[in-house]
Image (tube, rainbow, N blue to C red):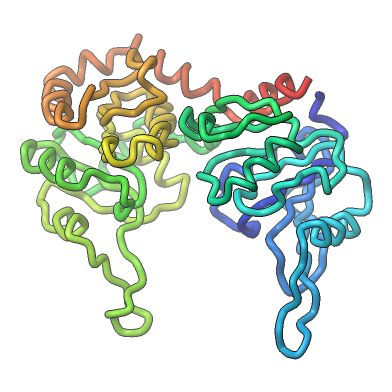
Length: 371
């Protein structure tokens, strides 16, 4: 199926915003191919189809549920919601692309020529997954456990890699200006970590052990680490987390908090290596294919990881512990060989791997899958 001059509808579980998750970027790249793309927000208080000034051919659709009766909101079936959306779009749909993990299981109600479901989260209801497999043409699962969780059905199902954000392609490479504009300028090895530092999947005790065992390594932590607290005064925030407390008190740790994407990707270019430290014993299925691994590899530099199922056959790209308890030894060994593990031929291999998952390439793959 050629993705050009088509009417494409994207169903999103969250409203259009500034953080540019995959669904928004797919919408942008599809619009740039000359398609009329309608990005459908969750239900709101009004009906509208709003052109996006930054992208020609891209429209954000808002629709409202039935008006309240006696102060209570009326119920609205997925079929009636689909009819409201179709009325606003007012044209036949060539491609329906659903990212909605918990609504619109029956994709046939949109009467699209082709329907795709993008499975990036675990399904809470078995009947939702069953309806998707019965009515979609293609289901793309972002990890092998997610793929295995799907029932059989009419839809073609396959594992599909995360797409690489364009910012990682255009990031300024190892700029000395960026490198010097950080807390540490000692020339010591710099280990990067990107992500929410209160993520329940992090193996926090193991992470702390690595920091303690390597006091001369700089650990650069990029990502949010505070949350709203019921115990704090109104408007205040706190981390309320022993792991974050430990990081804040460690002299070889630099905490950046949340950064704009451009700043984050440029800062990532200054690292000598990256760390993935998840509790893969308790959460093996949920950390089988973290997007951060692809992002790390896009810098070309060394990645040291806890067991990561979907990279088991890609260990030429990273250093992976066979078991969680092996990670400290693998990390220590890697530190001794950073220069060797970051030699040009290995950096080029990592870069080449990551860059094959740019959004344009991913769209070409999806188009072929639909043929």
